[in-house]
Length: 127
Image (cartoon, rainbow, N blue to C red; front, side):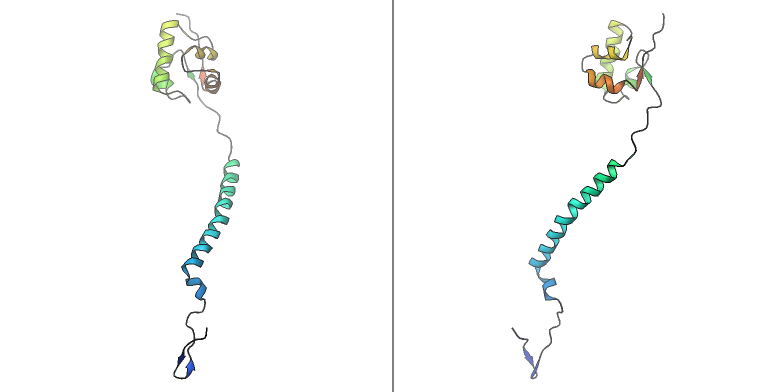
């Protein structure tokens, strides 16, 4: 298709790149760019997260025979309800003699007991 004639001469197209203005082409380019960029960004984020240093070791331990429910609720995997059950169990059955004895509390199994081991200690005091 030729450009229309203006005053006997062919009119020059003012649009240098007409394909850039096409809505369909612009959408196609955007979709293709996203198809390439999204997985690439995901790989970069995964690599960055995998390079993080491991969590710092716990610098304090809570004595499960002396701590109240509020202190116990600060432990990982222990919320207010479980902390209350720990205190109630300790009151009814007596002091814990090991961290593994936490498993006698409803809601604490081997996995939670193992995750709590670095954060708690058991001190048995003579009364």
